[in-house]
Length: 276
Image (tube, rainbow, N blue to C red; front, side, top):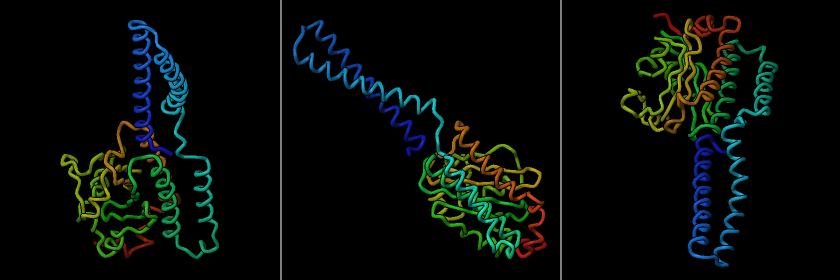
């Protein structure tokens, strides 16, 4: 399946090819009128018309798929698999022996897995990282998933040792958690000096070329962060992507707030939130 930018490129190249064929046909007609009829010109004209006829049918189909038909990035089979995985997590025999913290973390990780699978087929980039952060005073990366199918980030271990690690390393999400807003924040090029994006490591600089952050709840700040290793993967002019990420964030919010779980995190994991 072609990504949106690839489809647009193919579409415009095809438009250029079609225009070239029309130009050739106009030239042949003019040449036969002005300079006389020849068998070679006639054969060339017929062949060109045949190509134009086939190209015209393909052109109409491309127009329909590009502008009229919706992108089937999120198929019913993906949605069914996603729902089945959530049911499986909740229905496992071992769930009763797990604490609520571990179960919620697994559920939200599954949400991020579903989002990564969809975005990888949709947006520019070969590596995506998806995170859900909670707490503004001692920010915690609650759930993580990336294109390598890793569900544990390197920084999660560092955060266990230092509850202020994300604050001290100037993570972009900490600014959003401190000053929550309902509007998504898109950084199309993290290396642009105007964005003032801070990289915690050289590896992060290579992997995070563009990112989108959204505070899924402004009263109890928590946020979803999605990054790509390609520039301009996220654009304000692409409302469908924004709507999808809001859907993913809302799913994560449900798992965080259902039963008041987010208000119990400090009690469930006091080791992660030491009293100052």
